Image (cartoon, rainbow, N blue to C red):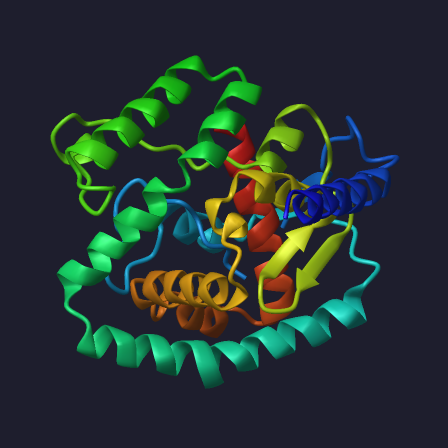
Length: 268
């Protein structure tokens, strides 16, 4: 078991190294921004309101004067992945999430959201440390301690409701951006959605501190990940549809919105 674990870690390091090597020429290169907007799942401080836009996304999408450029040499492949993800959402994810929402009490869905969000503490805390955000690091650790104890393993969120502590949406892709690493090329990952070479490298790095990746039984691991996806989606039904309907060319609009969103997260 130890040998298998070490082999898995080595493989991840190799893959992460290959992706980072692909960033050659992009390190310490800022993204090109001119004047001219997949919605990634964001770690939020509160449980999202039903059918309500995240304000930062709404503002970015409405600002037609700001266009962020990203190199997209895989345009045809990315469009194919975008089309696949679009169909998977409308044919699979959305119907399951709607049924789940209909038959699952709001209290249960909120408790599960809090629980999964609490388990994201290692990723957020490590990246707060890497970005030298001392205050944010303290809030992350304090929130985790309070929610894990008083919040009964994180199913409740007294750190926010009683102690007014925030959690901070931080990941390794943002940390790379914080230190000046550019996006690299734009990539639409099947099932996962919009990303970039930089953010893909970040995802591999963050996988080392994702507790779900240490579940040995693949069926349990897939089941937990599926539950998290469906539960989170049940709070966001209607957001993707509204963004898509408002876009003249959905693929380009989602690409621009993704890069704007990531840049905003890095600069916060």
